[in-house]
Length: 162
Ligand code: PNS
Image 1 (cartoon, rainbow, N blue to C red):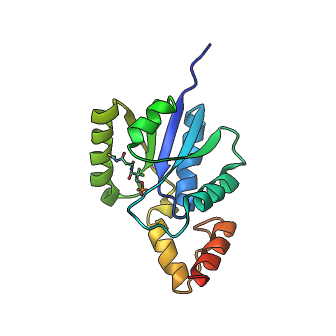
Image 2: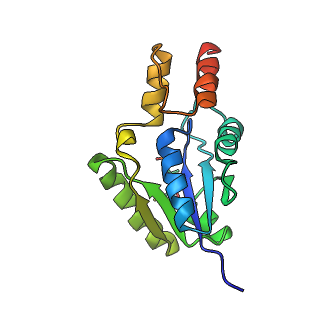
């Protein structure tokens, strides 16, 4: 039987943006399956809980039958090995992403002998980040076209409740 070629797309996804979705969609065309894995980060204080972030991701990726959403704690390489993935999938938006991504890719290869595949999102998303989206919404601006409509709605609701 042919082995499934699976990639893992890890991140904070606080919240998922159209740049993330762009990378996931490109990845799912290259791999048999993409596992979108939400980091349970015990130090950082995210805006959305892991459960909320996973629910949003599941909602916006359920149109794709070869995309799965899960979560992980601890080292990514350990989770990647437990899910039998053959590559880590990350997006590079601009040169400014490169140093950090390069370091992580080399560290992950050293720790877990796993390769990292980088994809580039559509040009329209090169400046897009979850942090900027949160800041714009908190200050009353529109993020239409930058996140799915439902994510924008949840973001407004969450920020209003703080
Ligand atoms: O969306 P982000 O915050 O840029 O994603 C960063 C992420 C989750 C990919 C990275 O912080 C990570 O893999 N953390 C898990 C802990 C780990 O394995 N650290 C060593 C990585 S070199």
